[in-house]
Image (cartoon, rainbow, N blue to C red):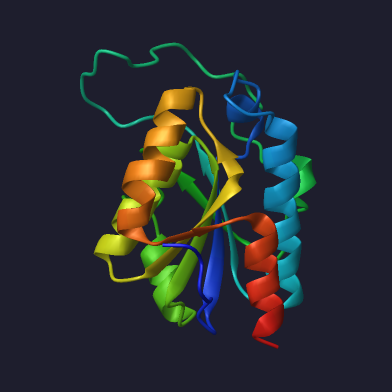
Amino acid sequence: MPLTTLDPKSALIVIDLQKGIASLPTAHPTEKIVKNASGMAAAFRRHDLPVVLVNVNGGASGRAEQTYRGSFPADFAELLPELDRQPRDHLVTKQTWGAFSGTDLEAFLRDAGVTQVVLCGIATSIGVESTARYAHELGFNVALAVDAMTDMNADAHANSLERIFPRLGETGTTQEIIDRLAERS
C-alpha cells in the first residue's frame, strides 16, 4: 500500500549504512541510497523525531550454506560519515540480520512512545526485511523508503519490494516520507 501518513511519533531506522557493507557491490548505486537515507535522517531530526542508526558487527552462530568465516576489517562496522551521526541518535549494534534480536531497540522505541518505524538501508532482503518483519510482529506501523535501500542481489531486492513489503506496511519514496513529515507540522 502506498504511503498514506506518518504517525505523530515515528522513528527512522537506518540499517547497516556502514563502511564494510557499503563497500560491497549492490544492485543500485550506494551513493544515492546513502544520500536519501541521510536526507531522511536530517528531516527526522528537524522534526525532533528519533533516528536509529544500526550497524552489524559479527553474525549469528549456527551453520548456514553461505556464512562468512573470515575476519572483518577494523573499520567494517563504522557508520558512514554522510549519516552525520548526532549525539541524540540511538545506535544499535546487532549480531543478526534484524535489528531487534538481542538489542535494546524495542525498549528504546517503546520508551520514546514510537508507534511507527520508517526503514531504509542495505540489504533490502536481509537487514531491512528482517527488521521490518519483526517490527510488524511487535505491532509497529511500518513504512519503507524504497529509494533509500538496495541489495546485493537485484532479484532479492525486487522480491522484497513487490511481494513482502506490501504485506508488512506502506512503501514510499524519500521525498514522500519527507513530505509526510512536513504535513504533520
